[in-house]
Image (tube, rainbow, N blue to C red; front, top):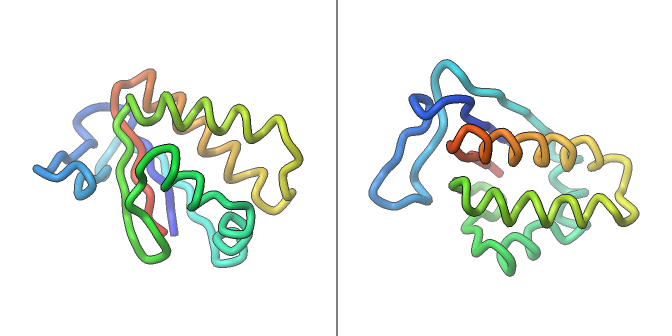
Length: 115
């Protein structure tokens, strides 16, 4: 399971269906996480929140791609979420997600998720 952010537009590969777009190549950052973190994210309600607030397509075993406009909403959600009590197991991934959302907005790229 991983997250990727493109640091330049050449690393974003768009397909007709945005949900099948992806990030790969030079100029990316990646963050890998294991099942323990994935389970903690699910227990925290992360997937449900993403379905409700961002119409995210992902579930365990799925991928999704957030364009910069979705990253703006995602960034706001993360900032609000980090103001509440957060399980220490998932605090690092939320911090990485926030960092990646900021970079995707700055560079006009996006974030790929693989759960």
